[in-house]
Length: 278
Ligand SMILES: [Zn+2]
Image (tube, rainbow, N blue to C red; front, side):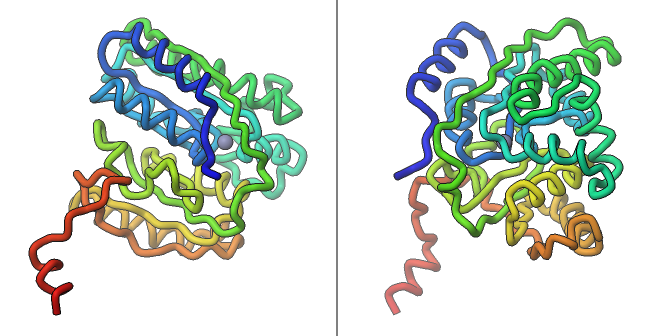
C-alpha cells in the first residue's frame, strides 16, 4: 500500500489554494509522506517554490527564506505529526553534548526557549515559529507584510512501516522545477528528500541522518554550474566528522535531467532505441 496523505487534507489544501491568487512559497518536512502535498501545490500554483528541510525548520535557512520573501507575498508553512526531526530536537535538548553547535543553537534552542519538551509540542509550535522567523527576515529587509498560512498535518502511516534502507536525495531549490526533479516521486518509499540552500544543508543533513538513519546520500545538481558547488559540498560532507560518524555513504553528485517529470515514463532517445534493437 502506498503512503498517502489523507484525501480530506488534500481537498482542504486545494480549497485553501483556490482562494489565493498567484504563486506561493511552501515549506515543510522532507518526510516522503508529505510529497503529494507539495506536488499538488506545484500543480495548482505554477511558479511556486518549495523548500523542504528536516522537520520543516527554517531557523538555519536564512538565505533561502530571504529569497522566498523577496519573491512571494504568500507562504504556507507546515509541520506534521510523527516527525522524526521533532524527535531529534526533543532528544537533543536532553543530550546537548552529542549535537553540533549550529544545530543546537539554530534549531534546538528556539524550541527549548519555548519550553517544548515533547514531540507534540515541537510539531505544534513549529509553524508559528517558522512564521515568526519569516516575518522577522521580511521586516529586516523591509519587504512588507507577508500572508503566512500555518498548518500542522496528520501523517497517517505508522513510523514502523518505514523501510529500513533509505536514500537521502539532496538538491537546491529551483523555482517551478520541483515536480520535475529526480527523487520527487510521491510513490517512492525508499527516498527522503531535502531541498534547501547548500549553506543550510549540513544542519538538515545532520538532523536527517540522526532521525532516519539513511544509508546513503545522493546529491542532485540541476546545472553544470551548480554541479561544481555540489562537488565541493559533497567533499566537505565526506570529511565532516559530525556526518561521518553515522557511516553514511556520500555519492558523487548526479547531474539531473531537468525537464523530465518523474512518474511519466521517459521515451528512449534515438540512440537508446537503436541500441535496444541490437
Ligand atoms: Zn518530519
